[in-house]
Amino acid sequence: MTYVIGKECIDAQDRSCVDVCPVDCIYEGSRKNYINPAECIDCGECELVCPEVAIFPARKATNDEWKQFTADNAAFFTEQLPGQDAPLGDPGGAEPLGSVDADTPLVAGWPQR
Image 1 (cartoon, rainbow, N blue to C red):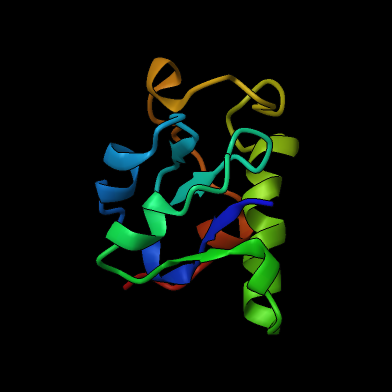
Image 2: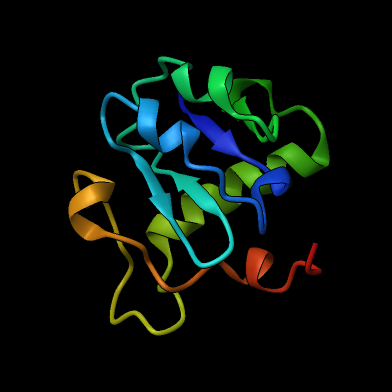
């Protein structure tokens, strides 16, 4: 299982979650952070420190919005993002990759805060 970052992170992108992640699986898009489901070890450290209360366990995605963001977090890694040559896949850590200057269509089209 994995953790997911929801809509509350859009245009907020507090980096507290990034700082505590022991496996460096939280990647930065243009407007939102994304957790790589293949790299997340389900420790929950990110959820505890998020001041936006944007992070939730995927296993608890029971409403439509949480299900939508669970699929969207995975899509950030499996679909080709605007301006990218290929899907990100599993880079093995966010820090070496740096900020990805793109978002999924859902997040890119989300109304500005």
